[in-house]
Image (tube, rainbow, N blue to C red; front, top):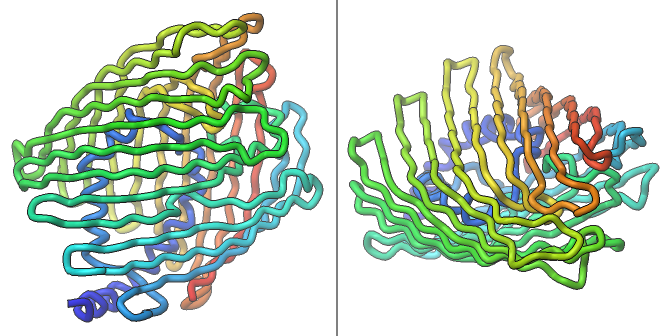
Length: 434
């Protein structure tokens, strides 16, 4: 059985490499990723299950077979110019050298069990601002173990990332002094798939740990429970309900400004619909009600219960052989990069172009507008708006070597000085697939 899977992977080898080249443009969209809690986790549901099932069908492109395990290795080297590395109104520029390594392992332990391990890590060397130099681990790193039992699929996982670029999380404070932060998510989920009906329940424990020498934001942790279930009213249309809750705890040994950050409870309840409109169009909509409740009042901070509607729209469309795009839009409440709770609206569009032979072009555009939930009593509310545009051009130079060049512009405005900045980033990258 395993040999047949390997044989299928060989057939898909070239397609897998083309996918890898397209993915090279995705880091420009890193700014759209946030550490949401139960609200985001409950939206994953059948979408995540479908993606995992597709992955299980093949181990994809591989470099090395070791016993029953299949491995994939690649390395990269990026040179980046950033004209505002500290996210200030008057920016300080720097040249950054960023080597990285990527490793993936797939192990079909048995016909019904599989283990996947991924690590995307590297080091950023700032040539002029050495205090900003740091290791990083990108999202997607971690391990996942799947167990199938009848109509049930049980997943155990641990995902880890170490953030680097504060601008990738809109609403983050400027004057960045190397706010290196680790986020680790460990948990389990169970999917009950009856073909016409799906039900999913999950639990995750998330830790947010500051790795900076001078910590300006508190460590935090959260306990998250999610559940959703749907019925296929048509073969291509799934409708259902979703809900979840989080208990968020901050380390009171650290402070945000002069006041400790209060613990909080967040919950949500709503519905979702997912439809495969055609072979080329897929759409999903989640909507409902969410509430974020801090634990009591805190001297020096403006805190209050925050509640209202949330929604998330996701659309993917393969227009033709030359163009595909994904569009997401929504309104939500969650934790940002620095542990600060905020409510925000967003729109994000990423287009993939294959107009020229051997070239892949990615053009991300996004807009986000939000408000901090906790504010200093003497400074008032903190509102912000961020817009960003960019492009990445990727070309395969040889069978194993590809190169990319990109540009990104980010502008963030706010009623507070510490949230105002803009920056330009130019990147040149080489990726080698062993």
